[in-house]
Image 1 (tube, rainbow, N blue to C red):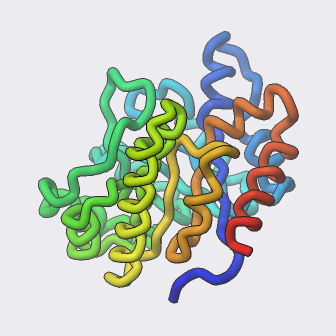
Image 2 (tube, one colour):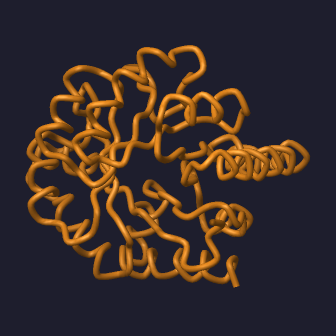
Length: 249
């Protein structure tokens, strides 16, 4: 069923940990940020435990699992180490993302179509443990079809290129990317997948994405943490929520 109700907002708190780790201190505390996000109306909390632990740490994940009232979306690479951590904690959701050590942020979606056998074996025990498995992918039909084929419950469509084109003033490319995301969401929904989206979304770019009827969740992090420096985390989340709700209205 196409989502005709409230569009969920997942708040990514990775970059609270980035600020903390810059000084090697105990603050700011990602769990405190997550609790503030819950109070401000977040439907879930997202945290990416990278292989190099550049922001979120193992202890952060333990504290989030124990301390959150809303669902935790645990982002991770498809490695044995991360699978073991997810199976130990059994978060509500696990989002499998591509990961390169040298990248500053996730640069694209998984190549599910080119790695389907391995990914199918990788996600099977996570699903069996009760985790809702999501694959972070581009809008290409072959990737969406592969995600459905290997048994993922959810796909999260990568909105980074759309946001980059908007920031660079490349309106034709931006609009073409938006249309491709719309088509991808429609295809994924038709294949029985729950459809999420995220990466790089801001106040200026969220409305057309939030208006895509097949989407049921947006995951937004870096921009909200950045805005929190000026306006506070709760007001930033509430403003983003208002824009999402207006897009659906």
